Length: 468
Image (cartoon, rainbow, N blue to C red; front, side, top):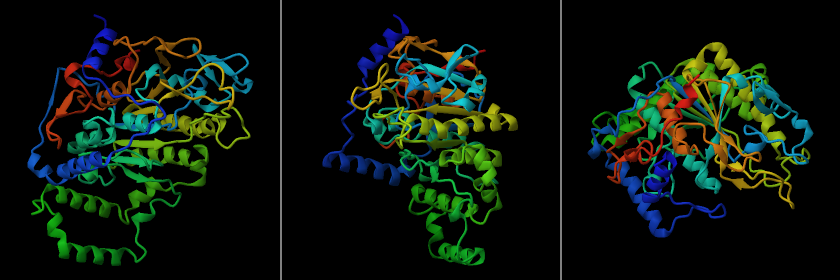
């Protein structure tokens, strides 16, 4: 039995639910109350489930080549055949894409000129395949590494929250930043059933830094109010709170927020100059990539950063520069920011310790554009770009047909398409986390696998990324 046949047999026995692209996730009244009850139960009864037990399903050896992860999420699904699985379609591909072959990689230099200069530092997986074609489902699926409408999907934490809980024992007492930060990511998935403090700290770039890190009445007045608050109900949020571990967790969240107030380290990491911004393209996405770099340089406990760049949903006028949303506009933001991030992390030595991932939720239709709207619609085939954290640059894993319609050669040991769950396992392996871990603290009592179907070895890291 081949790996592909084994995978299909396992999925058939324990299938994922698939939704057509036009169907949006929705909850019935009964489902709403059932999900709410599960969430509240997990929150208030979490103290009854401790100490947490976690165990691995098999003998695996994580790579452990990275300390941090930056995930650049291209929401809306970029066209793979116009970017990192480039296909030059006669009469369709614009001539100003100016494709060139660089070290054996055909790449649209005219579209992403600065990225072309860092191709030797990145690896491109071209055999990616999404599970769903609906934006909300596929976007959440990628962030939590599983079907969001499945039973455990409803309580599943973001990958960044898993990283945060795993790295908590390594956190120094003097580190004050959140372990998981999300820039420009208002719809980032949350901590699921994990403690609130392990969820994403959501913010947007501001050259003046974090406005909430100061108080209009001044530091002295703020401290007076803090002391008053503690005298009123501080004991309820303290360790061994009579209200349980959940409320103690809220106390930890309060303490973490206070540690960032009036702290010069916060200003250094979250503020930036016009000159710094210009190097990253002067866009909000570029500024977020800049802050991702500065945050890691601060070495204040942040281990997972998500930066979102949306508006890749190019159903119409994908090549029309006269339209507000087109591929030139989106790559125009992405290109300088991504290249500067890779270059600056490399110059500081942080790239060796930081895994950088670039991906959307799926790809876009191939070949000719749609007849009526001159765009590209939803398509399961997709790419992943990875760099740093020991990943060998200049690599191409997998190949597709001449049009990019489906995978011809998966390019890795599993001999099948690379799924989002495989990339989740890749992140965990790079960060030294056992991706086969199963926790027994979930409110459903089913056992929560870091990567689904860990007991069946359905998914695995793409270890070929580390091979020379």
